[in-house]
Length: 381
Image 1 (tube, one colour):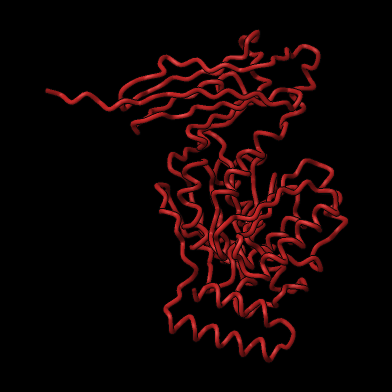
Image 2 (image 1 turned 120 degrees about the vertical axis):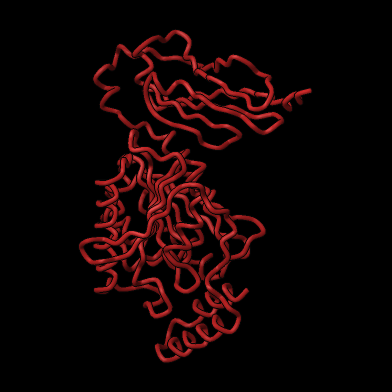
């Protein structure tokens, strides 16, 4: 409850500097009295590797999470998450919040430590101060280092934020739009004065999915600024998806962002150049089928699944992108004949849905879902 009180007081204290600073002191005392170390993180820990890193250029700390199963042998999508107001949120809290979600969707996660997201920041953030510029340069350095040293899919780098981290996230994406493929503000702050509308209008000329959501019982300031963000982006030509999460307060809900990024990467017709080179020779299909050796088996059930596009063969599959889901959880996504297959082992007894989504060369989508039943193992006598 102290988390909500802290940020709620902060939204009410904007006009007079002296009054604002007094409220900061009160907030700090409240945090100490009730033992607040930050807003609760309900997400379970992940199974990957979390590293505390430091940039060589300015010694800025950041947290790097490599998801379970990470290997440098293939490219991985990356999420850059901007933390909320310290002490209610922090870079390590953001990294922890994203761990299990990153494992599920296969995301590298980068959580930089920010200077301009704490009790002593300008609030609302209305000027691009030297501190904001330092944060901007630090995040640029961090992203470049991770790209250089991890196998990052540069076509799938996403920006997200929570709470007051939204100020810097919106600013950073507005300043460096070519880095990112999509953006999600999760119960986040927004300030139009620090954004460049010319950059925004140029940015909106390419497909750039945006999701902005907040919770039904969120802080009033968060709700207000989220609605301002939705209106501003739409007025500058963006297609914005907006949601209100029912029943929750100012809480962490990273799953919606992760799912949005996964779906947006499927729906965007990337690699257009490859299609145009062979235009006129690419066959069009109207359905996809899933071949499986069995629809029923005992646990653990290992399957070799294959998506078939009737009428295609060999390298004709190279122009199609395949994305696999098990029980609505992303498993793999890539282009080419090799990615029409999925190897999976099902352990949980019961029914499981297997779904494949296919992006066609002209940007259309095909989809097929099947049910697999897993039975209990027969006990040995």
